[in-house]
Image 1 (tube, helix red, strand yellow):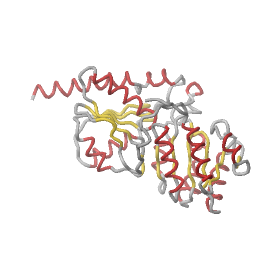
Image 2 (cartoon, helix red, strand yellow):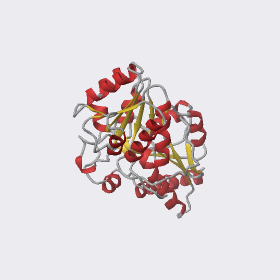
Image 3 (cartoon, helix red, strand yellow):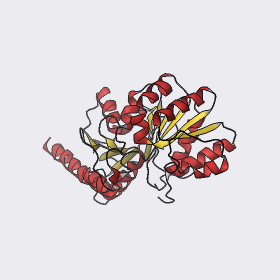
Image 4 (cartoon, one colour):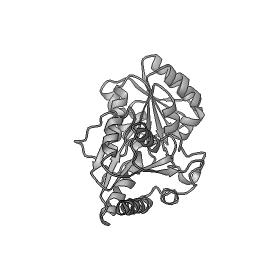
Length: 321
């Protein structure tokens, strides 16, 4: 795991490359040029970016209009404002009307840390999953991010891409090939399954390494593609171990934990699931990422603690039978 990059930088590089290969891409920002790290794009194509000012509803409406006019419109602004302030425009102008808009939610989750709940986006996956007609992705590393954006630009229709606000190291090499809907099994394990999406995939990778040192074999699964999702592949992987922990920098409702719960329940699969994230009815605390993740037990240490407890409980039950 090396070569950490900000995913916004990867986004900008990918958009520049797309225009250079002939795609009619138009980024739209809401006074978010700094957040989007979009300066290199402006330098390369000074007349191609649209800045609507601090007006997220106008941002999404403008993007939809550009798409109707034949452009590939890409919104580049902070996830909490895109999802909350422009909710109706996303629902109606983009999703319901099936316009070719790519919504990129920057600094998702609790990336803004101490700026607190006004700037946290811990419900965006739940909101987007509630809309029809939109594909939903959350890359976990720079290589995956680039490939997801490339796919989104070539795909005809609405897409939401959830990007973390911190630099992330690589989890994949250049041989990796993103496939929409596919589940990404990073490592096999037989005692417990750890599953996450986006930046918290790194937490479960670290947790699995720590658990291995204590004799626990943990499978590590990343879900970069929330919709579409190969639920049969997901079910098959979940059935390989006797318990599951989902981890996300999102409310436990509506995100990857809910997706896992739905797959298990709808297939009558009696595998216990612990959903780690922001608890039902709570907000993420206003703190830097390390403190925030520790408090909500979505850091590697918290995951290890819960995994050890669950594995012990599983072992105790097995010995009593």
